[in-house]
Length: 336
Image 1 (cartoon, rainbow, N blue to C red):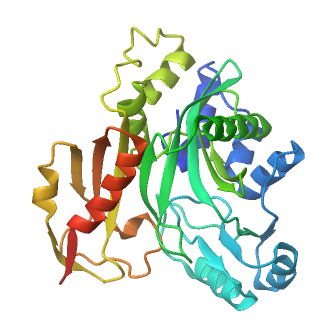
Image 2 (cartoon, rainbow, N blue to C red):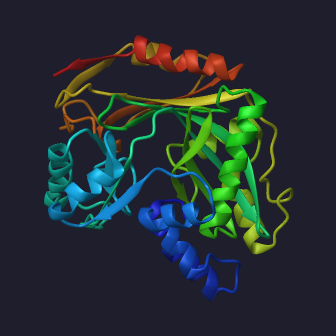
């Protein structure tokens, strides 16, 4: 079972070797390559943004003319918001692609690919539909609200489970996500479907054949009682999910996580109000991710810019959103 984006191929290969339910090579390819993903979903008759895969600056002008502006550009097979940005001109698109090609850092020991996808910008609130597939049937366990930082970047600053939605809209998002799961060929294991609700319609951002990150699995467990990793492993190996402890009593009606950043400052000295916040009874865990004095990227571009995280519970999805805001107001990041 893949816990991260880069381990989907390995998990599928190992499962197949062990004679366990496994994703096909075609499905692995479609969930790992954002262009092939878009094509499979579009071929199934589902709405996706306009998109083009590009490798060279020479291809950008024609691609931008097809997609239109605003647009979003990102590597075809990375994760964690790395090099994802909104662009409003061909010049901005060229600069974004050049930054990808100039990147020398490794992501989990892997260099970035030179291929990028440029796609139509989709306005709207972002969600993820997370769940599992067993015997070919997709089950959405929870729909989570995603809270993002300012554009042109799309840094994830929080998640709220369950999302503050009416039941009709939740069902619509869940139904669209299960259609996407079928379209890309996820026949077993976990899935993490990111989408936007744009003018009342769900539109795919990405689909992954792995567990969700950012502690969403823990938020789901607190709010629903289902331990997603345990459930998936029990299904794949033929164990009894009840006896394996995958089903528990929920501990809260809603749960969330708030990430803090240094707001573009290259380092920070301390988090004012951090200890007082951590003592609140509704705070489940508080983690400092980047120590005071350490260097931080100033572009607020990806997960490496997040310096701290707070996991919390609430009595309703709306209260969870209020607490997400309260955490940002109570903790001050003091610069070095």
